[in-house]
Image (cartoon, rainbow, N blue to C red; front, side, top):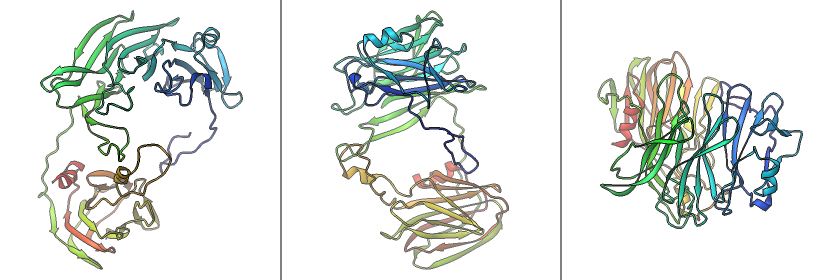
Length: 447
């Protein structure tokens, strides 16, 4: 695919073409893959025979694509196929495949193996974080596997218990999780059950492996957590220290359904110092008013401002939440018609339609669990907080404190706001002659 242009459009300029096919004899209905690149001429792909639920033995493989020739090769440079010209390379979990392609097989342990991450070390050798799961899925072991230049070096890190989530009868191959430090993949982070004040809770552990593949240190990073800390991920940076992020909270299922309506209620934690902004919702406030019912349109004037923020708490009537909502500074904000209504900004001759549906997925709570391909219409988010901020160059819109759209536009000036065009209630209208931060807008919603 091409990279996104200034309008966020991407295009296929070649392909798509299938690269790998896992043979039916391996139960290969859905190989799982991870990718990494040296940024120059190679795309590495590490993948499994299938999902580890499908069979008691699941191998791990690695190939790379030469982007100049589109050749698929093993780590030793042996040619498998030319993508788009040859048939997909077929992998299997048979002794014959391993004998014929020894450099393509990373791990053939008789376990339910799975890949958590793939990256490259300073010498551009691939490194993986993997888990080996017992046949009965009750025991998960963490590993680091790296290419030394002539062989795969596998290092046992720790036992990680079983599946981390609260549902005992599903997804038993869901480990707490592993992450590689991209700047130094000799460092691996893992989520492991540990005893604390709250009982057995998944905590984060930092593992260090030396250049000879020996585990030399383990350091616990979180302690006495009230909820599980799982699925760590390291955000790489060339200029600052690596940032670790992870999920913390309750996890019942990866999908919301009638069986498990809780889904996963998790927050994102980080070791990064997050800037704390001063929250002052009185500063710069030009107008604060409970508008009430709006069948028609209502106008509000304020002193002219080239920096501004507008927030509204909206309660549309049932079935009446589509259409025009407000006009300001020469723009119109509304919601498109149809089963998948989306926010839309109109300015002069241009229209900016949000990529997000204005609603929530609560409808999934009424249906059976599964990926049947059906789309359930979104339910109205009522009430919802609409926020619009402008800093002189960029117009941003927010739904319930979350960024929805960013539109570059210069020269706006606000002196009047016209609300209405739908049937419903505006609980509170606020207009500021300054640009509020996202944290400030989010505070309004949380209150």
